[in-house]
Image 1 (cartoon, rainbow, N blue to C red):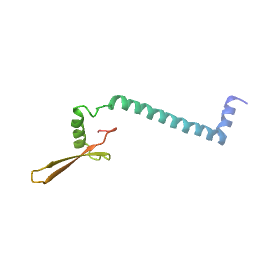
Image 2: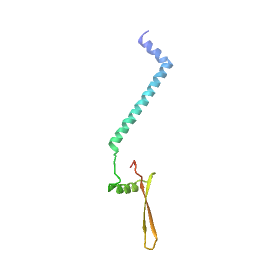
Image 3: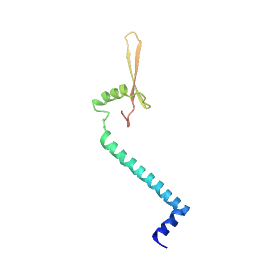
Image 4: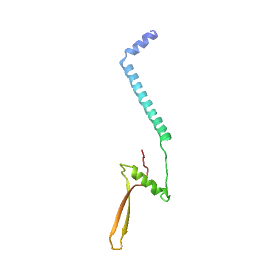
Length: 107
């Protein structure tokens, strides 16, 4: 049996062809997964930053106000209530909603 006969027999074998098909699909999935991992690392290194602003910092309230203006669909909010009582006894109350402490994704 020559090499060409051997390869021809393997080519005609459906189990061998199916095995190579599974190997090809598995390889494609592994390459796609690795590409997604590398892409995520690239995205995080070049397009994301981490910013930590302690609540005692003067810019904390400025940053909360900026996030409030630019975040259209915020799901986690903190409320800050301020009220002013007039001499007549009338109370004026104002509610300000701010993003809650935590991680925020800003586009």
